[in-house]
Image (cartoon, rainbow, N blue to C red; front, side, top):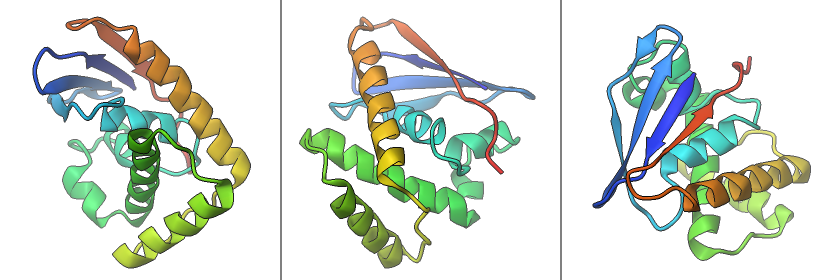
Length: 154
């Protein structure tokens, strides 16, 4: 699946998705001072072996919004993405054990089951996020950045 992020001039960036079965409607991504939320999804879903929002789209979903509400794994992935988003905003990485504990509490509070995550997984996702953040920072306003989502997790 091909993801094309376009850096916007106003309050939004844009995501255009082309899945195996064709294009999806564009998604406005509110600017948040770090990489777009859906780019965070890409960083997490390209490393973690769990199907989240983007994999739901790749599997023929309409954007994962409605389908994702009912998909328990997608909700657990969403909690993980939110954790990394918080780290991005604070510009501070939690120690792995604290991250994992807070992720478990966050999932529990929302009725989700935490994914099995390890320090090695967190390190890999953080490295991917740093790489894509540097690439995105170099994209000029109006410029595009294309990412590919690897194969589907089981």
